Image 1 (cartoon, helix red, strand yellow):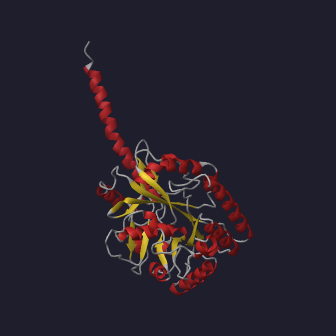
Image 2: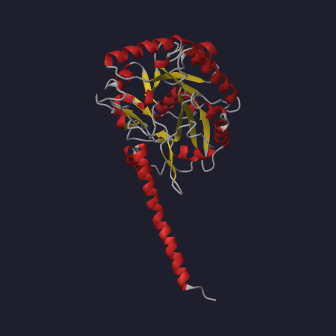
Image 3: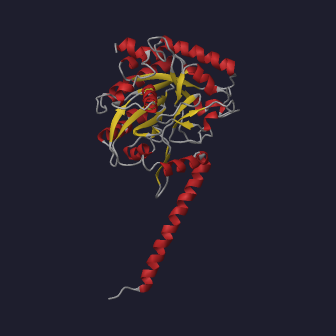
Length: 389
């Protein structure tokens, strides 16, 4: 018996209507997200990068370097010491269950705030560094500082950190990674959170090798460039890092400071958009389902897509439940087993080691990437002196 032509036409009409509505719904969601999360800042760069990334997004095997940068804020006073010790005790138990194929445990980078300096906290963190659990770098919430007061306080803080063997190598050379408090890098939230208009230049001349603040959402501090590792040149105006020159194999470094970004983009389009920005917090929780989107938006040095960097950030103290309540354990287990659709070898490393690898790639170096972990910026003194490396 022949089918009913009227029903067939109705069905075809419904299918065409749904197909036409879906893109409209996606556009509406993107508009609402742009208003809520300031996505308009980076969407042009995001789509431009997607269109130019076809060769890098192949199924070829690659080395994947995972670094966890922690806006680590235990607070101040005696309670901070206790919170820090409790967190470290939980973390020591947690990392025993995880390792990359080379047998290396997850490497944490504690970006410790200058404005919450606590001598005992740095002492206890340095002990964790000596155990091979990670490294200490610099975080800072500040406002209302001019160039002179900013540089003076930074210099004092680096001296205090170096007394613990952090941010200084065995030869006494100061080198540090940086995360701006509240993402307000380079006077980008003036006048709410303001500082010197040449922060990038000051950081660079005081030993900062790279900034690890971004990516983020919901603040105009987020740069236009996304999913990129690039050099930013300080112009003397706020938010000089908004654009820059991508790090590339064989290209001469251009700019005052390297901006080392984490993933940013849409990892799910339908039935609802999911915006991935590399945060492992209470909200959003780390989950295995997020891993494909994180990997797809990982960064690399132009000309070297086979070395990919996945920088994930957290507020470890505030997100202890995410770290030690099972969510992180499940996520790292899935990462270590291998994410379907990706052919990678996993490496856990610190922010400093990731920077060294980026510079090695820029210089055209090849071979086992592990040989470059300490290539330019040497291991901090607290890792060498206490561990006997």
